[in-house]
Image (tube, rainbow, N blue to C red):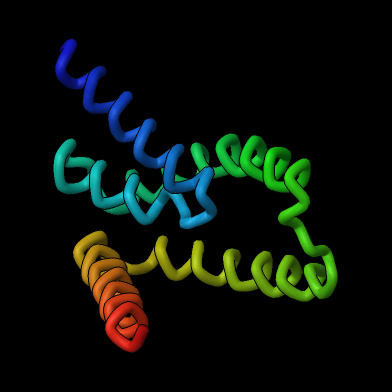
Length: 122
């Protein structure tokens, strides 16, 4: 029980750090919950969404105070994000957890390859 609570805290810590840096805490939180704690993919995504709301609020306040928020064109990002998040939520409800895990793994792999190429080019 104490180890499980400790792992929850470590997951929250890592997700909070990455979320605060603006890289998305879910990038770390979802794999941690599924791989190390054995959570189902859909449950991990739901936990990520709830924790994201709280973490992003505090990160937004700090980034705004530091002058890192540019509101020009943000309405288009917000509107399209809301529309496609509804679509994605319905899609996630239809797909099996294994399919979601595969899609997420491919997505993270592609991001890693792209970032590696950027580093190599520099």
